Image (cartoon, rainbow, N blue to C red; front, side, top):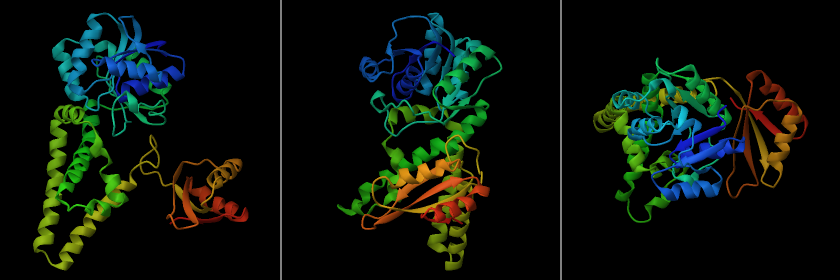
Length: 359
């Protein structure tokens, strides 16, 4: 594990890496084009100003278009033994690094799959990467030392390192991250068409779907420009699907509309079912879900989790406790191994909890 790490870029990701590494005793040095971001990150405990000291490993935490120049600058100054980056686009920065004359042997392209809708050091969190996937995309030139240092850094931040090729990474990100950002922004951008006061009609679904609309336009311009091909292809496919739906609603019979909508919804359900039940988990693993009714009073959730833990049950996930403001009780759902769900319901019921197995 690198003992001294330099981070170029003190925004959300850079400062969060700094906080995570400092927590495990790593010395962290920070650099940013905005001195105020470094001061803020320093005040939060993410690291101190990087003034040209040599480091074991450097993390380039800047937008995709700036990766190659920053790699080259750190290498020319001889500041780091190995390097990695955190950009959510890989193929374009790699191509630009080749043109810029970057020493590809010391660099392991990487991308932690974590973030928040609001950037900057002020939003940084030490546990941002806990049990999150950290993708390593080494190229043929990448040395074993660079890969090892990057993997060790990811683990030190609490993340789960995985490997992918740059092109497969970019295809996946276009589907899972880049296009969803655009869709969220477009949905939120439609709100000015509403009459005054109508925004009060927005439910939780709209809030959840548009949460990403608060993201930084400058950063996302760099990301989308850097992943043009895959994002464009996915955007055109989505546009075609929306066009087919609009055509059906405009011209088709009731039966045809039902068929189109059912097809969309069923494919959507199938796609969502492939998501891991928790970050970093295996896609599509069929957890058993157990619902438990809790009184809406302090200590109930803690008592439940203590009881389940005492029985030696491994909880894979906990769905949020939900209840209406007027209701005296609500439901929390626990994910366990499928063969443990029935026994857990029996134990909870015997202990006085109102529990059931979700179908």
